[in-house]
Image (cartoon, rainbow, N blue to C red; front, side):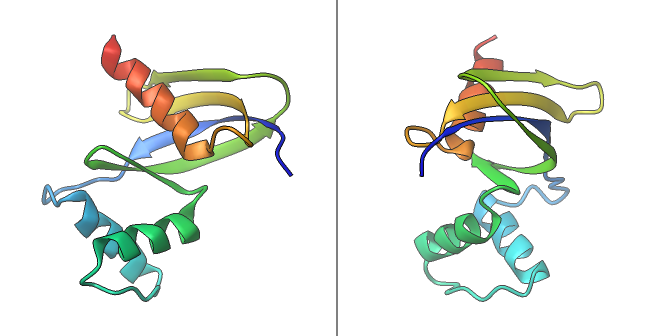
Length: 116
């Protein structure tokens, strides 16, 4: 059933010391969690990642973000995000989940930070 969701939390970019492509970071996270995938099929890898980590990680452009803290709230559509001094992001999103997903809501927030 679709409903309005309001979520506040903290998002942090996954540390990428070796400057790996996003798909390699995704494989690394899947491997760390002992999740099997077809290593020759990037679409399969992304689908499995999304299915397993829908609320835990966000893929945005060439980056991977981890949801470090998440608290569900109540009310109407809100898309807020701010960068913290330590490089993490605090966010507040509220949306109707029949027309928007958590990932899309976070992407909307991240897009706003890039437009500033």
